[in-house]
Image (cartoon, rainbow, N blue to C red):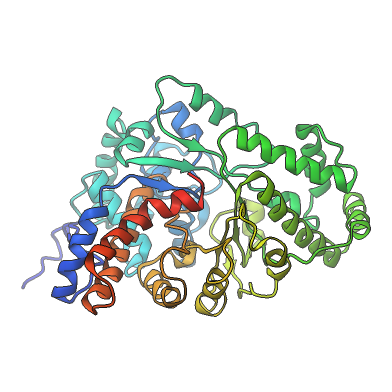
Amino acid sequence: MTVNLHQPASLVLHPDRLLPTDPRVRDIARRLYDAVRDLPIISPHGHVNPRMLLDNVPFRDPAELFVTPDHYVTRLLHASGVPLEALGVGQGPLSETAARAAWRLLCEHWDLYRGTPVRYWLESELVEIFGVTVRPSAATADAIYDHLAERLSQDEYKPRALFDRFKISALATTDDPCDDLAVHGALVADPTWSGRVIPTFRPDRYLEASEAGWPTLVARLGQVSGEDTSNYAGWVKAMEARRQYFISHGATSADHAHTDCGTEPLQPSEAERIYHAAVAGTATLIEAVALRRHMLLEMARMSTEDGLTMTIHAGVRRDHHQPSAARFGPDTGHDIPLRGDFTDPLRPLLERYGTHPNLKLVLFTLDESTFSRELAPLAGFYPSVYVGQPWWFLDAPDAIRRWRSAITETVGFSRTSGFIDDTRAFCTIPVRHDMSRRLDSGYLATLVAEHRLDEDEALETAVDIVTRLPQEVFKL
């Protein structure tokens, strides 16, 4: 075959992408995938701004939609020498000239994404949602930009129309404990809106007493909650009050992301002493970590009482490059995974609450070595524990396959969370969920082909993974 290097390459998605290559197994996988491909999306953990859906204004430009807010995209460009400021990171709304330049940079470096899930997601978005037919490149960048800009000007590409088109039945956002949740309330009150968007309680910053500005944060927490946070007991009551406020606005889960998941308890007098030192700004790092671990244990206690599903995304060094964090802010692509450790750090929590009927604890990791060594065995004994599906650096085809292989023989499918997309890039939601459905269909088809599972059981499981599991685990 002769390839014309002067003719733009077409962009076509193969209908069997990500399905097994063995023809017999692929036939089974097709049947399983056909049963789940069009089911509604449950998105129980993500970072989409709900105001986008309340205001329902058109997306400004392709860069805002595909490039600037998505650290999955920007980090690899940055690693290859593209400055973050050239991509619009941390700069607010871009001019048309700047947005087009950022888009060009993505297209000019399209080869960087070969073999990555980012490439897979972007291609799926461009083809399936926006009807792009040529591969991004330096030569096609402007034409694709114009095509996308024209689509974004149409009513059917406004956020609410896309929400309906994506068949999202529930979308959870991630929210600060002091947020008034006015946007969520306005969506519920809007007679023209019928979707379900719920908040998630995310108290990380309020537990990290060693961070700069923490005394100001807890003072603000006291003001918002009406509790006296000058003392430890008031801090705990303030957290309880804000959780109730979130529940009254539809929240079903609380999310916790720290460098580790230690839960060692403190004596009440010691917790009080360290808390006062932290408020005064004199607590040591060791003391601050001890207070956070104690409070994470308290958060589990609160979940047994108020019913919020507790998710732990542990093992990340946030803002690894401090100069970039200072210039561009958090979540700009330089959070780096750490080694995982769950068995002993979670033991105090699980000894107290691991068999409590009202606790659901979902554990996520970026350390693959913990899949079969720690997470699956924990979920295979404790009724409260579920293994979270691969997240962040691991929500990629081969990593998801490795995860299924590592945990299924210990916990099967029922002790898993269902897929989470964990995205700030709105249009990646359907393509990420579709990727997961294809991969699970392939895994189940292999079990059927090996006569380890009957096809009717595989079909039931495929549907459960998409519907029942996230509904039950996240109480949706």
